[in-house]
Image 1 (spheres, one colour):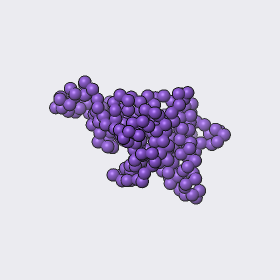
Image 2 (cartoon, one colour; image 1 turned 120 degrees about the vertical axis):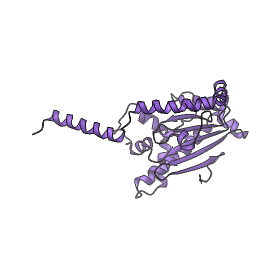
Image 3 (cartoon, helix red, strand yellow; image 1 turned 180 degrees about the vertical axis):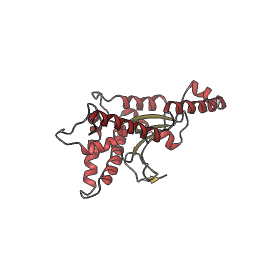
Image 4 (cartoon, helix red, strand yellow; image 1 turned 90 degrees about the vertical axis):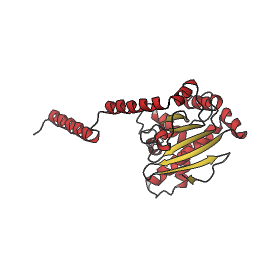
Length: 237
């Protein structure tokens, strides 16, 4: 009978072989080659990079999830200097509060609006978001807590979870509830954005527009909607 140590060693070898099949190229070597290509682009577009070295003037701020499958620059074809990007778990923005410990997102938005004078803020949710799935599966008594920080962060979207559960019939597939909750969390973060005076004031003056978006990487779709002081109808790109 095979010993436990031998079984573990064999399993590690199998996983190593699987990883090599899935990614035959060394990841660092891939990055090095990509940067070599970028350097050629850098030399070709010297005028652009000379300008970027002096200042940045993006028209957009994009708030997206940290999920490796939803890089907004790649999905939306954004070039360097075109968008100020903030990424975190589940694309969440907490409401305005000087007492809150969540200051990273607020400081990024403040800089984008007050100093860079962006004209648009887009919050992008996405299909099969792990953060929103964890939120939906959280037990009220906290008995299935699994991390030191994640639950505290995703609870920002708890109101979105309640809205989604009220909207989606109980006998619906989980995926339907999941999708609804992601979109409602985007709407919640849009409303939370408006709670910051440095966002609300330029919005009222017509200098800033807020957009919600949902990237469905399963079906290859990207839906956007606009916030004025209410959530408008969806529009597909």
